[in-house]
Amino acid sequence: VIKATYLEITKWRKNLFTLPRGKAGVHFIDEVARLLYLFTDETTWSGLALSMVHVFIPLMLQKPSANSKAKNNAKFLAKRLALWSEGDLQGLMDEAREIQARLIQSSMKKEISCYVAFTRLMLQGQVGKAIR
Image (tube, rainbow, N blue to C red):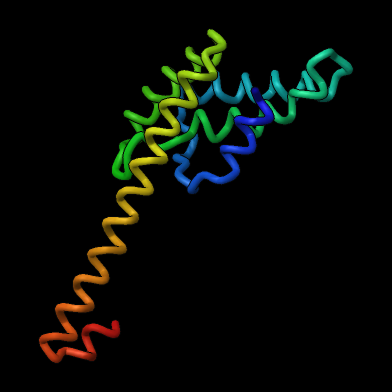
């Protein structure tokens, strides 16, 4: 499951917020440190722990929206950390897939609007503005 999740996450668009201060940020660092500890010590998890770190960071730090504020980011991080500690990887993936789908839709809308603006300016004879 972790390997398949990792392969999916590597194809996502970059959409991470900076780590917030406070309890949520501290819990995030504690969990990353715990996963790295599992990797460095010869535990039964050492083969999977590094992959878990690579999955954990993008899942936790996904921006919920393009204009999300730091306070909201901290709330989302705390909620995601709770889901992670419960072992609800599927719930985290569903939320992250939804965010990535919104990113793709918004970028497609921007691309289409650029084409429309270019065409409109060319039809108006404003070649200089259209090329910019």
